[in-house]
Image (spheres, rainbow, N blue to C red):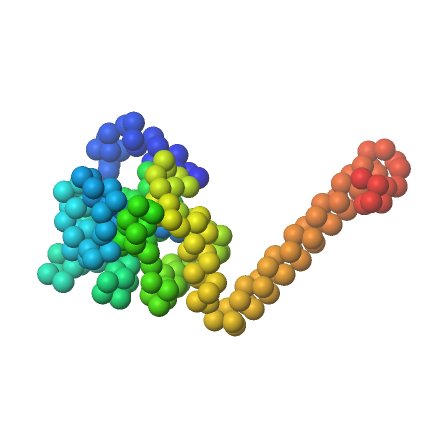
Length: 234
């Protein structure tokens, strides 16, 4: 929340006045998913044949100098891609393009509070493109990368870009919970069991907290009124 407010403030105040030349960190609270869309001239164009180099050149023109502090392309150049990782279905790989601890350039208001993952391709219905089921494992691989860095994130923290912007991204042919569905399909059974146990522990802690608060309120009311009250009466 604090980083979101800071980013909004920095849209108004020039970055240079805030010491913006220094690398800024990212506190991950969400995993935001994108698609490459079409082209400016042809929004419905197919783009699944594109690769990381094409994305990098486009972002280099848009944000010159905004390079990763760690990840480099095949030529040894630091990536300028604003996403933290890119899924290339055509070449069957997930490419890390920016450290998860680095500020991104993929979602205004959330660039310092989220991991941005790009799925190369245009998944608006007009393009006719889709993610082949046999390549959905790449989405799960990208999620495992995120989860390894930010273990506090849960399944519901995976959201499309359109949740934070007036865009169709990650494609109007895909439902909001598409990535969540893919993760569940790809997730080993043991992980599902572990997640279920985690939910039980959280529910148990919540119940204990509610009971503690009820006891505290009952005791406080008793002292204030001199009347004994049970938690049920509150």
